[in-house]
Each structure stands twice: as C-alpha cells, then as structure tokens.
Amino acid sequence: RDRRVVDFWCMDRPSATGKALNYFLEIKKAGYCVSKGTDECLAGDATRKINEAIEQISLLKKINPSWSGDGDVFIAMSVIHGYHSINKSVAYDEKPVIDGLKRLIDGRTGAQLIASTWTLPEEMDIQWDSHRCAFVTIAGIVTTKKR
Image (cartoon, rainbow, N blue to C red; front, side):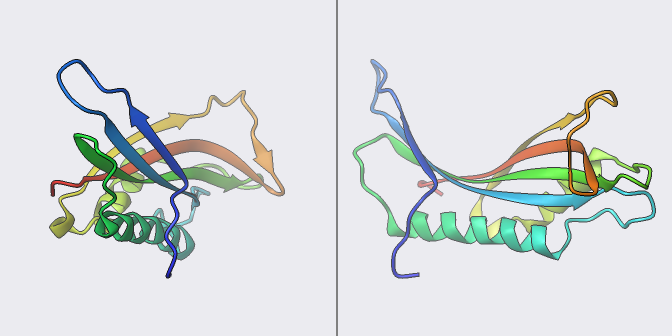
C-alpha cells in the first residue's frame, strides 16, 4: 500500500492546439458464470477484483501525478470471461453483466462506464479445464483528474 504502481501508462501525442493526455490503466481479469441454472451476477471474486482495480486507480488519482499534460485519464479496466460448464447449456444475456458493473461504480466519483462484449460464435471453441468461454466483455471504469 505504500508503493503505487499502475499496469499500463500511455500518452496521447500533443496536438497543435494543446498538450498531451496521460492515460493510466489498471487491469484485472474476472470470470462470470453463465451455465444454465446459475444466477447471473458478478460473483464475489469478480466483484472483489473489479473493486480492487477501482480502488487502485482512485488511489493513483489521489497521488496526483503531474506530468505536464492537458489532463489525466484513469481507467480501471476489467476483462470478464463469460464461462460455462462443458456439461451445461448456456443462459446468457449481456444486460446483467453491464448492470452489475454499473452497480460497482460509486456515484460520487463521477466515473463513467464504457464496455464492449464479444459473443463468441458457436463454432469457435475456447476452453480451459472443464469450462468453455461464451463471451468476453472488456469494461473500463473511467475517471479524469478534473473530477
């Protein structure tokens, strides 16, 4: 907790009209079970990881890095794999995933959610151990220095 690091940092090139933007990204991977008969929600481990990313990026924002840009953008990014048991059918709707992410955002932070989901075609088989992947959602919880 004494030392803060960030997973990725990048800078947008300065434009003719202004300085550069700094982007700070904290990335976590989470799972989301979509086996039929399972309650669709961000389970404890996924929620913990996403909240941890939000906390890390909030702490980094408080450190207030001063890198001579027009502004800083802080992004807590989650890569969520929608998995299901090989032996069970899939019951999946994107809305509960996005709704679950929205519930994790504290309204006082002024953060915004950007998300995109890639639903895998049935003929595409991505699997590990005894599970298969039905979708991948990449979500960013974004805050700026000015808020």
